[in-house]
Length: 117
Image 1 (cartoon, rainbow, N blue to C red):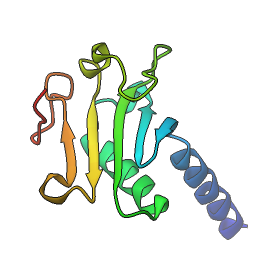
Image 2: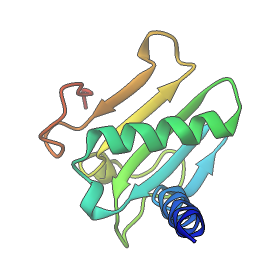
Image 3: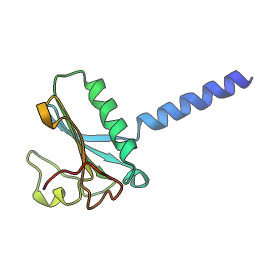
């Protein structure tokens, strides 16, 4: 019985974790995503879900731009410049020296790796 409960809890946790990065628009290898508002300052969380998403993409390059939950989502490529101010982070893979996670340090106070706007 204990094993069954642990298995159910593990499955529920995995399902909840998998749904926490909502990719709502893609343009080739560039993806726009939202994280829950309660994760908007969690740098490790954002980095791990973006990394996982790009690993699951299984392509050479991958770019994930992350915002917090919002009804006003950026659309199109390029998106309107007003969305740059609200973007929390950007994850790059396959972009040479720019690979990795960078944050908007004005919004994500705990971040140490910032991108220039």
